[in-house]
Image (cartoon, rainbow, N blue to C red; front, side, top):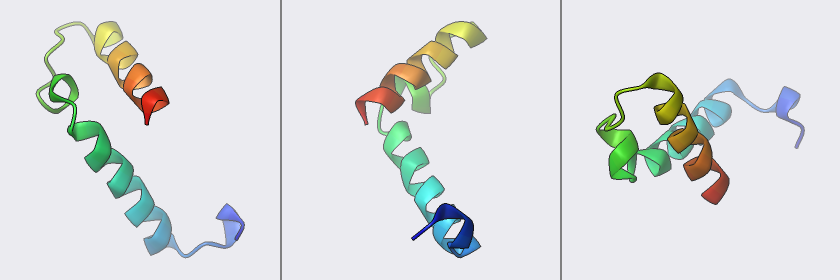
Length: 50
């Protein structure tokens, strides 16, 4: 199914599941890094691993 034709609630559910998976990593859930660019890098690396 094409992303354009998906129901909005299905897309939202998929996004919420991805955020839930990201929050399983302690550094992201607690915003451990003080600098935004380090936090962004951490989110990027974890997203690639998922």
